[in-house]
Length: 216
Image (tube, rainbow, N blue to C red; front, side, top):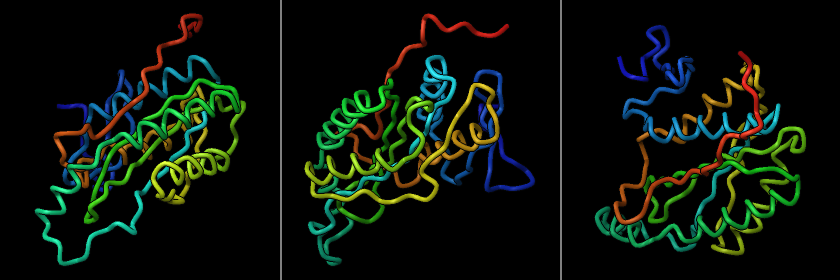
């Protein structure tokens, strides 16, 4: 059996095995990218070696729809145009956002972003931000700052996602597990922008706190 197994009673969900623990995640017919999900879970756990609480914030960044081509543009051309759009803008936005959040709270910043596209020429990006939960207690400031940077860099918008904020703890309580389940949305295979020229995701590379002592 692989790391993912279906929930036989409710096919909306599946179970993901990570470091000898089973977590409920969302199930998608097209499957889950376990590489993305594993790395996101790893970064959440690394953050918990620095802070007893970790705030998890979800964002969606959209590129400027005013440049969307007309409905007469062929799907082949749409795909070609999408492939010409690099990730330079999201990389710069995440760099600025990370630097700002490190100063504002202060906190180490874990993150992951994935690139997706449905029917628009332009890809959109789903993002999860991880911060010191003892300092950050809502998604409001992160949404505001991200919107300012994204608008300045691209003229695009920040979508107000439902339930953007969760708080994880070392006790792996219900809300912690819910945050993990929510993050599985970023790892779904469907709508990933099939552009081989540019990567479809990026994840922070924080290392475990060397001073953290694991409980026996």
